[in-house]
Structure formats: C-alpha cells, structure tokens
Image 1: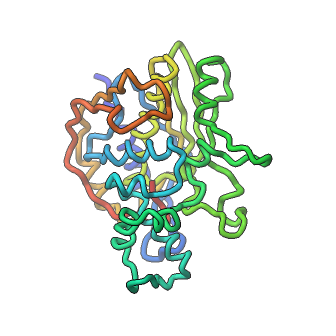
Image 2 (image 1 turned 180 degrees about the vertical axis):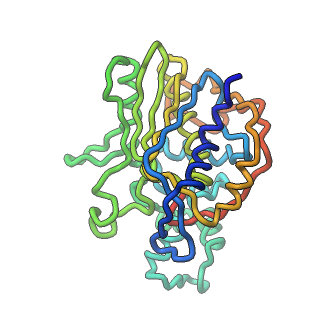
Length: 317
C-alpha cells in the first residue's frame, strides 16, 4: 500500500526536530529555531488537494490571502474586512515604526486590536497605515520596471502557458532587491521580505506542474498554508490554461521550527494522516482578475483538530 503523501511533511518535521541545527532568532531573544537547509517534497494533485489532515488548516485564510495576492494588493484592509488576520502583526509593526514607536493617536495609545478595528472602520486610516509596502501581490502583478512600467508577471505567465507551453522560462519572482533589507532605499523595504521567493510552471506529459522555491520556511505554522496556497495556485493556472494539474513541488532553503512550537509539533507527529479532500473550481471562472472566494468548494475534508501556535513576527506566512 502506497504511503500517504502527507508523511513527506511529517517526516520533514521529524528530521528538523531530530537533526536541526540550533539558531537564534533575530530581534527575538526569547525564541530559538531548529533548522535544516535544502529539502524537497512533492504532491500529485490528481490524488487530492494537499490540505494537511493531521491538524485542521484555516482554509478561509488561505483562500482570501491568495485572492489578496492575485489582486496585486499591498494593503491589509481586504484581509481585515474578511476577518483574516494573518498579516495584522506586520501592519501593526509598520504602523508603530511610522509613528516612531509613540503610538499616539487622537484618543491616546492604540493597541493592536484597536489598530485592526480602525483599519476596518476608517478607510483613510487604512490607506495610510494598512500598507505593507511592495509585498507578494505587488511584485506578482505590478513589478516596478526601471522605465516606469508595471509588469504583470501573473498574466504574462498565463499567456505563455497557453501559447508556448513547451518553454522553460515561465517563472514568477517576488524577490526584488530594490525593496529588501539594506538593499532598499530609505523607507522602501517591505514589511516582510518574501519567504516564498519564486516559482516556475512547466508542462510535462500534458499536465501543468509548479515548483516553488521557499528561502525561509516556518514549518509548523507557515508551510501548511504555503502547500495549500501554491497547490491551489497550480490548479487555478491549470484551469485557466486548459490543462489538468500535475505536481506541486515544494523546494525549501532554510526549513525550521520555532522553539515555541516544539510541543505542538510533537503532538502533530503522533497523528496519522487521513485522505486528502477535493477542491473544485467554478467552471465559469475564465479570467484571473475575476477570481473570488465563492469560486472554490472544498469537499470531504476530515482533519484532526487544530493545534494552535503563536506567530513569531520575524517569521510568518
């Protein structure tokens, strides 16, 4: 009997726990990580949608985040309005930085919860303080070219798959040095430099596959999101270009587990995977810019209960 493909992920967790190198965490002295470098897992999408079953995964958050990316947005308001809060910490961090840490507003200090509510209720406040800089969606849909153009890598890739599927250059990158760390101009660095940095589409044997290179991978919290998100991305591209989906290949640079997730990982490793669910895409979806939450239907998802863990703001999704 063939072993469930979720064991690839579980075995990676076990590998890191048993063989990972201990590292400190920048700007967070209370937390360490165990880390390995250079790993790969893959999922045949004809065998089901790889939404992990050894803990319940927040699918609504995955769907809205991917739609947010595909809209080319850099403002958390869309997420907040849809009650998805996985990027709140980075928005709040930038808000504090913008005010030099003073957090002084009209009514005194603003907590993170009050900041999020203000984003939801106050459009002008959200426009000013909900921005994360040129994050994933901006680089995917509006990459700033040196001549002033905005390059839509997503639409370009879709057209390339349709017209020249035999080509080997269908790559989308989020890693733009102009907006990363010390390489960025003053005030231009993104809130979180891209962890999932680039991905490539390839047509083999009449199926569309995708490989992601992820430079930094928070295995417990982030990677289950990333697996489902890029598997769905592959399925969406296959749907829009007329191909059946092939494999999603996930290649890791630094794959790590935060010390404040060790107990949760040990609990997850005790669980046996269940059959993957099925994801259906609305057959009427024909244009990437028309994508909406209601275009997706998940069937037969029967996971173990969720296992909660605290987000470490230097890491993330």
